[in-house]
Length: 424
Image (tube, rainbow, N blue to C red):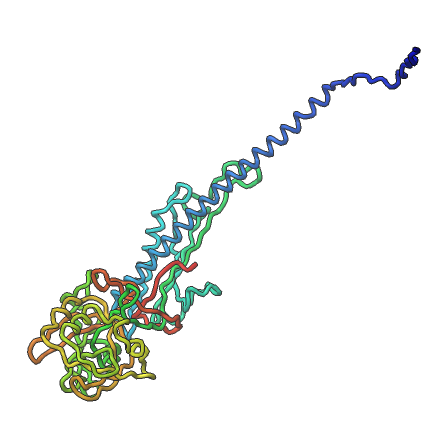
């Protein structure tokens, strides 16, 4: 059998190995590219390092301004609570403002920016008034109306630049980009909430501080308006005002003038068989001595006195008649003594009718007071009170903190100070 003849393919179809020629010129071209990328990466690393350094310094400056603002505000509140009360408002003086600024500067200096103590200048501490510090639409500090309307806000601006100790921040490699230093600035604003207070009963773990007593509103207004101790005639009744006692920061009272006039709560202005004690009810209610003692020390629980929300809505345009309690015996004197020097809230009335347990006091408002003296023995019974500046959540007992709400107002009642906090 014959086989087919094998035909060899043309050589043009044969594959040949590829020969790659290496060029020393191409290998050398990589070196400049690597050098450029290395410089770029080092620059980016330096940039990131400087940015991080600046951010840390800014955070330190912010901490310093925050602490300085809160310290200055705390000093402002402390001085308002100690100040004489003139025309119903605690006095705030230039010396007080200087002390608040000094406190802010002191606390700022306890902080450092990049290892250098903060240098806060007096001109960088601003104090003024804000009607509603929580309203972020305006940062203006109102300087009008002072001192009749005290200031309630303090603003701190912390700087580290050529005008302050340590100078501007020195950057690590910022010079490569034409910037070898950086200025640091941080601002903080702290304020106390002031306005129109709304008092409360005991609820949600907080205490309203309400006293089961009532005081004539006209006598209260005379007490606020008086400039000096002495006798004033109110609605035909002679009321003796004194300045003999001082409330202490430890929650007690001691002999000595403090610029806050005092008045005796009883017996003037009350009705027969009643010494101004009240029940927190709109109808007749028989109270025991132990209940009265508990009300004096702890105040009314809002959940137990169903008429209390209505009573707390009382004002001059909306008087609320509240039942009187005839009991004011020497047995409750120890209860009153236990709250001497501690802030409380006192109901005011403009008229009283009936007698004994059938008496009704027309409540028209509530004010902040401190009881500084008491004598419930014999016929010369009295409880001596003075106006007081109460701060929200302030301790009024061993584990009791007073609570009330504040509606912002351009004409605030500075005898009630709401929450204090950083607002900017």
